[in-house]
Image (cartoon, rainbow, N blue to C red):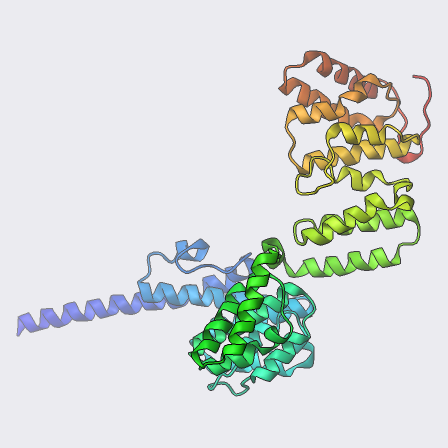
Length: 425
């Protein structure tokens, strides 16, 4: 009897410990996480991050519950505070996708809201909800293939179009859809081919599924398009595919600035801004803009023509790349003192962007040591000369730079940017 009592007591103690641990997990998830979840800058991955470290002592199940709750609160907060339709739709989808395993009905309701709400359905990111609902037999709002194709037809940007087609294909994979569903989905891609190698897998899938149902003509067309894309070697740049939502807003704004530009100076500034914005996202467009800038006589005479030239210094991805010496020769023809200073600054900014080595910096800025500089604006450039010369152990150039900087301290030197005029020191 005593042995049974001890055994009962031990079992009770273990149960109590488990209960206390579970209670501790609940307390942490409802108190600590509510207090800290709004501070998260990104969703916590299970088993990592601040929350993971805080709850490492909990049992596996309790720890998973706490981490789920942390991410739930983070995604919910991001959804509630998203600005702009695209950001809000993306946040709604992310939240709905996260809760789908534990709350499938709530997830489906949120996805259906994106499709049913005209404002949301017009978003760049609506395709994610459409894909999740595509031919979904468990949804209260399944999306038909024709409806999905119509949604894609309204997308404006090529990277969104590709992602939408890819998402549709992945959805059919998940559904183990019959081959005819693939043929139906991909028909617009056969009727109006898209010439990017990014679509190789999609066209290959179209060939495979068409052959399975003996659609020889469809398969041959898909294969011919795929072969032509491979030969053409055109692709959507990876950087464009990964670009944040804000990129297209900036792109649209830059295009509007180009359209609104009236004077040659305004056109040079706007075209340069657009060429720099697109240089890592869409090389063909960026290169075409550079050609327009450099080959248009009216723009070459603009006062700020040095701006596109500066952005080409040592820029290896452009066929119009300039060497340091070529840029120096180009700006040496500038007569206006303020414009000349701004040209030197623009070249310096480009080299900083490229993280140029001290020798390159010194090669670029050394000609300033041979000129009698009478304005304080050049001080930053001379500090760079001193730093680069010291790094290269060129004491003569370092001393010349120090002499100018000492004059800046000892003498009032006017500022070009403030309209100051030269005078004898």
